[in-house]
Length: 460
Image 1: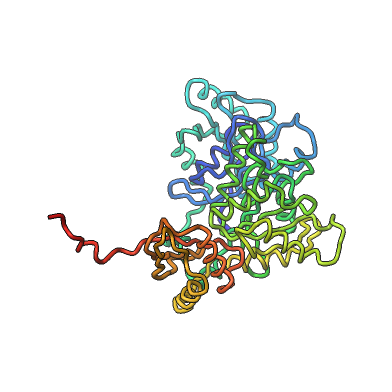
Image 2: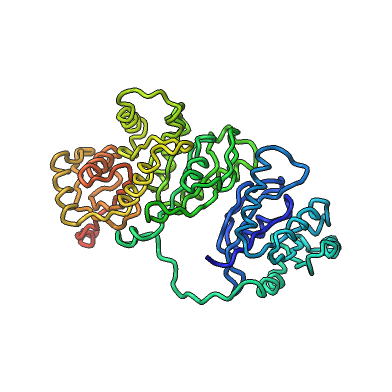
């Protein structure tokens, strides 16, 4: 494991902004409201020639009370235990507060190297606040502005004495657009867990990890950031993203929740398989259908998980009824795997992880050209395309251009005249013939060039 640094400090001093600056992208939510970060978040940081793991933590206020606050503190303490060094951040514009002093004592007791960072140090007031921080007894403050990127060279100098050199690696990240099935079988599967608020997403991930890694609460909306965790299940690597609950747009009023939803949508786009989690007692509600439609539009493999199954009264044929309901309510992902689980009790977890791997394999599948040609001929013979305005539509041939998800191009005579209902027929037939349950299938229409276009008769 690489050298790890935990960013600690009271709320709203800019820890998440600094985290985003070091990882090079907006992974953590940032807002003026204190206490946005609740879970600990890890990322791979790079500062000039230094590479290390960075952990963003919850900002804790001594005056705050409650079970959620206590569990946030546990997450921060765990992050400090995991870290090799600490980056203690203060707000230089505000100056020292009693909470800063309490955090400084906390940092000293950890008995680990501490780099004192005076954030928001731009301007005259920032300079004065940075000078005050000498009173903490943690050495010279590094004056930076995480938002504007100022002072990064000074931060590099302070960290360079702690972070060991890493060997250069010239290998570029592989292109996600198209990889072989053999490569796909060896890479970690990126999985996003999405659903309405309080569907049990964080509880499920905690069970997979075997620890209380993510905060859970009966209160809806506990998760705000999309938190990524690494999981190994029966020898297979997964990178799992816990996301904020998705409500109807009309019910989202707070700016912070809008940011959380946007973060969840980014996680869906980054994922390869999306697990749509529903509450067993309130499944297939309107918002569930909207979320499934979003996943299909984004072209991600989908697995349906019906959570809190331990609270449902058991009846005969319940699982087969789930399958029937799923195909009825979600025809756009017909055949998508559906698994009954209990994140709290651990029921159905093996089946869920198996379904994720199977959905991922289907999403990466390439169809044999000869078999695709045979299917295409049989499909148009069994159900020829309808004539439009008395003219017959001619379908020439079809070819797969990429996987992830399976995407094909259909060459035809008049692309704009082919009805959507006929495309749905082709997609459903393709799914059934090649066993592609649930995964999005893309068919793009392209008109074949007219070889006689240049021989048109010129006007005399």
